[in-house]
Amino acid sequence: MFVLVNLKTYPCDPLEVATAVRDVDETTDARLAVAPQATHVERVAETGVETWAQHVDPIDHGSNTGHTLAESVADAGAVGTLINHSERRLKLADIDGAVQAAQRADLETVVCANNPEQIGAAAALGPDAVAVEPPELIGTGTPVSQADPDIVEDAVTAAENVDDDVSVLCGAGISTGDDVVAAGDLGAEGVLLASGVAKADDPRDALEDLVDPL
Ligand code: G3P
Image (cartoon, rainbow, N blue to C red; front, side):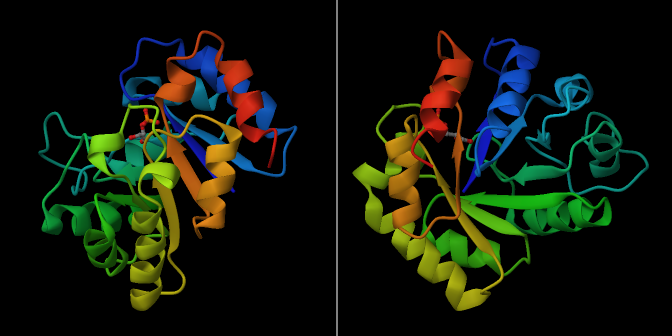
């Protein structure tokens, strides 16, 4: 299973979480990675943890003030990027452009979507993976695998119907190892999670619990 810890703009110490993710990754067969804010990518990547960007824009080098260039996050050490996270929505044409920008910079891509219908559309854009996250469950601590298992299974079917090579992740409310196992049982190849680690009193403990049953 792929476990991607999104730090959003939570007031956690990105280096503390990054080193915990790096260390716990070495204890498990699961693949762990962290997605800090863009300004923290370089320092986080220097810890040796697998580092992802939270977003890239559908742009190339040039006149794009205030945008995030895929090549720049790759130069800073990111190996992948989220695109169209529920908290950073893009128009369809811009999702397409962001996937192309990320691919140009050799970044792995996960395109997020709210539901299975959008997952089908996202998969058609040719990312490495898609992630279904019902917005109403994000940050609630109620795992999508428990509250809405159908949405995960339907997302897997929707992606398979478009392109077998696109992996499906799920996210929202996931905070325990059992939640990750349940996501895998529903056909997901990984999970996105944030508050369960970024807001934990001890992120390392939270991560150890998370991978314990994997
Ligand atoms: O990107 C993952 C995220 O949206 C899920 O957040 O806090 O429910 O784990 P959370």
